[in-house]
Image (cartoon, rainbow, N blue to C red):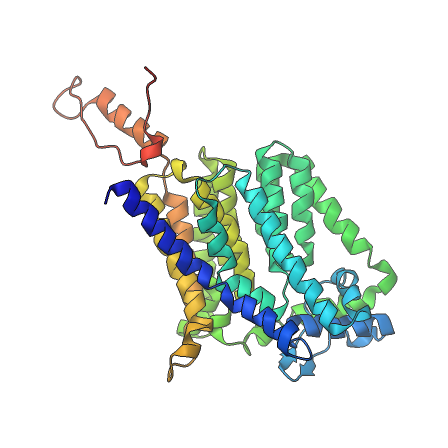
Length: 421
C-alpha cells in the first residue's frame, strides 16, 4: 500500500468515526418529532417561558429564578434578547423547538461556509464531520441554545476583516452584546485590527440594541445587572465539568478562594500578554482570529459546555491554514483539539455506556483549551523558520563569518518552494 493510499484510508476512517457521532443529535430530533408527544424541556423551553412572561407584561419576574421539572433556571441575557425570543411564546412548543434547532443547524452550516472562504481547504468533509459530529453541536440541539449564531457572527466578522471591511467587521462584533461576557476580548481586537472607525461601529451597534429596550423601562436593566452580579453564586450550583474556562478548571481543582483568584488573575495577565505579543507578529487574519477566539473562551469568567461550539472557528481555521504552520506545531495543535473533542464527548455521552462511572469532578476543558491557545500562540510559520535558517547561514557560527549551517526544513510538504521547468 502506497503512502498516498494509506493516508486516504486513514482519512476515510477518521471521517467515519467523526460522522457516526452525529447520530446523537439525529436520534434526539427523531425522538422529539417522531416519538415524543412534546419536545424536551431544556434551555429553549425556559427561554420560551420568559418570553411568555414578557408578552403577558409580567416584567418583574423576567429575571427571577424559575423552577422547572428539569431544574432551576436563570435568565442572564441582556433585555435586548427579549425581542429575539418573543416568537417562541406565540407559536406551538413543537414548532418553536423545531425553529430553534433549524436555526442552529443553519447557522452552523453558514459559519463553516464563511470560514472556508478564508482559505479553501483540501478536505472539507473532515471539518464538516468534526463539527456536526461533535458533542458541542449535540449540546446545542438538545438544550436549544444559540452558540451557533455566536460562531456565525465571529466568522462573519473575520471574513470582513480579511477583505478589508473593518467597519462591517466591527458591526458584526457589536452583535455579541447579546452575550456581553464575550464582547471585551473581541472589542479590543476590533480596535487593534480596524482602528477607531471599526470600534465606533461596534459601539454603535451595541448602543443601538441597548437603546431599543428603553420602552421596557430602566427596571428591566436593573434586574439584569442584579442577576449578573450573582454569577459566582449561580455558577457554584453547576457541576464543574459543565464549564470550559480556565477559571472553572481552577475552581474544580483548588476550590473558590483567594488563591484561586490570585492564580486566575496572574494567568489572565500572562495569557493576554502572550496573545497581544503574538498578534503583533506578522500572521494571517485567519490565524489571528483563531487565537483571539481561543483567548475569549479561556479567560472568560463564564462559558458553558454548549458555548464550546464557537471553537469550530479556531479549529476550522487551523485545518484550512495548514501551510502556515510548521509540521510539528500543526500536529501539536491537532492533539489538543482531539483531546478536547473526545473529553467533551466522554464527559457527556460516553459515560452513559460505561456503568459505574459518574460525572467528572475536575473541569479538564479549561486546561485543554489553555494548552491549545499556547500552542497556537507559539506556532511559527514556515517562512519565519526559513528566515531564521537563512540568518544563521549568513551570519555564520563561531567557526567564522563564512561558515554555512544546514538545517532541515520542518514545514509541511505543501509549503516547500517549487520550480517550473
